[in-house]
Image (cartoon, rainbow, N blue to C red; front, side):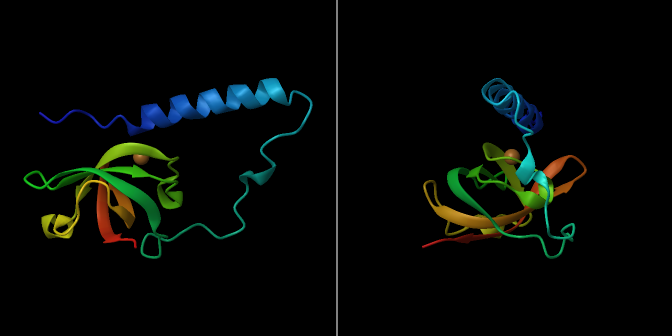
Length: 120
Ligand SMILES: [Cu+2]
């Protein structure tokens, strides 16, 4: 049994907290001015790399826990969560604490890392 991915719930909770704080501190200001994205919607193949720090690697299961920054193509805020490596070999040479750049896609409810590389 694999525990269900809790990323969306965490993201929603975080978003709600932030929204509440903004509403209280700027009741008269029209917020969300920076919400629009000037770029056209991102194609899967050309998805941008996201920054992350490796927290944990499970080589047997082919999973990696990342504390990641925003992932524009998944519409995901920064958080710590588990990703499945597309290929277990991708995790070779990585260790907890490494700074990485990675690209992930969603596939039937699972989040798959398709590219991951260390950052110096
Ligand atoms: Cu996430």
